[in-house]
Image (cartoon, rainbow, N blue to C red; front, side, top):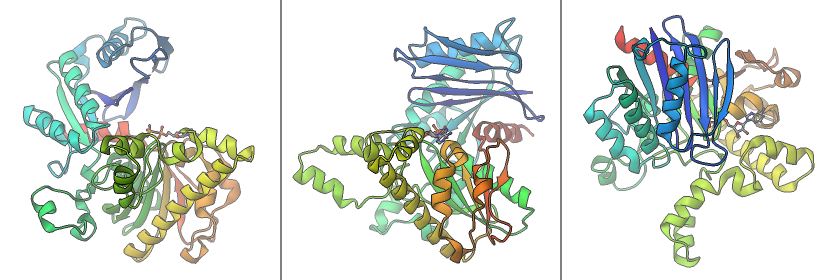
Length: 394
Ligand code: ADP
C-alpha cells in the first residue's frame, strides 16, 4: 500500500510517497517559498528529477500540482487517486489530547484548530494541508501524527511550571515538547544499533527549530521546548531560553507591543539575531572569514547545548549515547566538535576524523575509549509518519 506523507508549513509543503511495509520511497519533494516570486517545486522519483517554477501561488495550487505530477503518465508514480491508500500529516501541536497517531475526523480538526493559539506558526498550516488533502483525496483515510505525542510520557516533575496550579489544571499550561516524531525515530534507531536493553540517551535535533530530549528506555522524560516551540536551544530565528522579564521590559520601557516582541523572539532572534544570517552554512562561512559575530554565535549555540547535556545527564543519572540529527546536527561537524569538546568528565570523547566524514547513514563519531557513544543519525520524519499511519491499519 502507498502512503502519502504531507508536511505543510507556512510557506512550504514537503511530501513523500512511501510504499509500506517495504518502506520504499516512491517519490519525494518540496514546494518552497509558496506565494513568492521564488516559489519552486522539486519532485523526485527513482527515474526522474524535476525542478519547476510558476503556478505555485497558494498551498492549494502547489498541492494540486504535486498531485498532477503523481498522476502524470510519464513522470508519475500512480495511475489513479485511489492508488494512494492513506495520507499521513505532520501536526505540530496536539496539546494533551493526543498521545498517539490519530485518524482525522471533524473533532480532531477542531482540536488542531484550537491548538493553533499555542503553535501559530505551525498548526494553521498543518490544518490547511489536511483540508486540501481531504479535497484532493476524498475517499482516503487521513491520519495525523503529532510532534507532541512522543512527549506525553514526560513526568509531572518536568511537565509543570512553577506558576499557580490553576494554570495547569484549568488552562493546561505545561511543557508539551515538540519534534517528537524525529526524537522517537532517531532514538529507536540508536537503541537498535547499539543493541541496548536499558538506555539513557540524549537526542539533539538541530534544524531550523532545535530541541533536545532526555530519553530513558525509549521514553521521553524531559525536553527543551516547552509550552510552545520557543524555549531551550538557540534556533535559526527563535531565541530559545531568555529571562521572561525581558519581554515586560521591552513592552513597558522600550515601547514595543506584545505582538512586536512575540515576532521579534520568534522570527528575528536566535542565530539570525546574533549574526544577520539564518542559515548555518552562511554563519560557518562567516566563522572561516573571522566574522566575530558569527564566531561568538557558534560559541553561544554550542554552550547552550552543552548546558542541556549536563542537566539531562544529571536527571538521568547517567548517559549511554548522544545523538545529533536534522539539517545542522547531521551536517555541521563544526558545531558537533564545539559541543563535544571538554566533556570528558561525562565520558564523552569525539573522534575528530570520524566527525569530519560525510555519510547519509547512521554513524558513530566517538573514540574507541569514549564511554558515551556519539551518533549522527539522519532523521526521517516522513518515514516515521508513514510507519505510524501503517501501524494504525494493522
Ligand atoms: P527543518 O526541517 O527544521 O526546516 P532542517 O532539518 O532541514 O530544518 O535544517 C535546516 C538547517 O540545516 C539550516 O539552518 C541549514 O543551514 C542547516 N544545514 C543544512 N545543510 C547544512 C550543512 N551542510 N552544513 C551546515 N548546516 C547545514
